[in-house]
Each structure stands twice: as C-alpha cells, then as structure tokens.
Image (cartoon, rainbow, N blue to C red):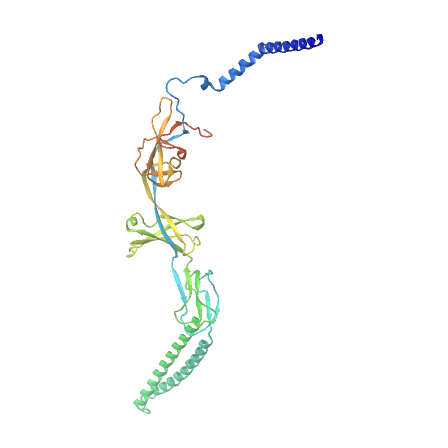
Length: 394
C-alpha cells in the first residue's frame, strides 16, 4: 500500500511541475514581446483590414494609360496607280528576201546586240550564182556597147562624105544608144544582186536586247516574216492607268515610285501622259521612264506619285483599336476626386497611314484626350489612371 501511494504521489508531483513550467513560459516577458511583434507585422501587411473605409468606396483603375491628342498635320498626298512594264520601243527583225534557208543563227533571247550586228545567216549559193550570171551579162553588154560605139563613130566621121545613107547612119546611132541602155540595165540588175547578197545576212536594226526569237536553223524564210523581237536600246517604261479626274494632278517630270516584286522599289519619271482616253475603260495611260535593267517587261506593279500635301487630323497608330472590322478610339473624361478617369469608346473612320500616324476622317474633336495605347484591354466606361512615361535618355 505504501508503495502504491508513493507512485501516485510521484505522478502528481511531476504533473504539477509541468503545469508550473508551462504557465511560467506563457507568462514570460520574452514570449509576450514575440506575440506583440507578430500582431504588429500582420497589421502592417494589411492596413486596409484594420482601417475601416471612410465615406465613399475606393474605385480601382482597370489600367494605367498615357494620353495623346489628335494632331493637325500636313499630310502627303499620294496618287496610287496600277500598270505594267513595257519595252520603250520594240523592233521587229525580219528577212528582206524570201525563199532562202537559214544557215546560221548567231544570237538568242536575252543577248545584248549592237546596231548592224549579224543575227542570222541565210544560204547564199543561189544568190551568188545569180550575181555571177549578171556579171557575165554586164561584160557582154559592155562589149556590145563598144562595138556599137565604134560603128557610130565611123558613121559620124563619114557622115558628110555621102558613103553611107542617112538611114544607115541613124541605125548606127540608135544601136549605140540601145547598147548603152542595155549596159545600164545590166549594171542595175547586178547592183540588185549585190543587195540580195547583202540581205542574206540579217542584222540588228539598233542597239538593244533580244526579247524573243522565232528563227530556227533550216527554216526557209519569207520576206517580212518575224525572226527576232528587239527591245530598242534596252529601255523599258511603266505605263500606269489614270482616270480623267486624276490626269490634272499629273505632269511631265514628276517622280514615280514603283513597288517591284520582292520588296524592291525603283524611282522613275513621267515622260508623257496619253492625249486620249480609252473608250472602254475611260482611263488614260501615263508613260514613266525607269532605269535600264531595273524591271522586266510584263511585270504588273503599283506606282505612287507625290502630288503635294493636304492638311489633315492624325493620331498615333497605337491609339486606334480594331474590333469586329471597325476602328475605335477611347476618349478620356475629366478626372474624379481620386484622380481617376473614365473612358468612352468612340467609333472613327480612318484614312491613310504615314509612318507611325494614321489619319482620322472627322467625327472627333481636335481637343479630345485619347488613350495612347492599350485600347485592346479596355471597354466602354472603364476607369483608368493617367500616367506620364519618362522616355529613356531624357
């Protein structure tokens, strides 16, 4: 019994000691200071939770934005035309003689040729034979003329002697004139044969670039049939279509900027404007000289002509937001007591763009304050905070 009481007493003593230690720990000044510090940190982290609102509820801004205004600018006026590239002039190269076979083709498409350069050689055997035949005829007629002249000279010497009748003397004179005429005819025919021989060599009529070829080895040519097509002097031009209203803004000497395929551009100069208007399209052509080798004939390109300046209203491109196929800007209202503003979504009609600006075609006050950027994140009536961004390097 005494042993059991001793164990119970021991347990109670230990329990009392543990309770006493716990009470001493919770009441210790260091522990109380730690709890006070934690409560202070929570209050600092969320002051709104500890401070009840005073008066009206606080409004939060949906976005921080910068402000811009429509600007009155001198807008460049550009006339946009469409057209194609053509050779300045094309020369058709054809044979002047017919019935001869092509013996040699000396040039091909794309070749640079000079005036008088041989392009095709025709078989000239028959022409040479005809010329030799004519040479013999000329020699024969020369001999006939010499005989007739000799007879006529003798007749003139004895004309007054009465040895020959007047009729016979006239016959000798006429024979001399006939022989001289026959010789002249033969010599003319000989010259014709020489021309035909020269025509067996088809040459370039001018400097330029061969754009097409229909001459093939072995073909028998006919007079006037096209063998080559030549871009004279390698010059090309752009022919743009312009309506009757636009013609008044164009004149010779104006610069035209052509946008070529591949992102390239070339500048040309207006040479002339067609004096007539096409009865079907009601358009006229404007002829623009462009540098050699800058474009290929057949290209369809767009041209822009600077025709002066016009006053207009413009805003930065970032101020315009597109939704459902329409353009909008967000106009700012006056600031409230908290310094925040509301935005009003306004539908606008846009025009041309130039650099980082876009033209507004009316419907907006020039003194309106607009959201500079971020319109894609705003809706009509949203509250925003206006900020001023400092440019780097300022």
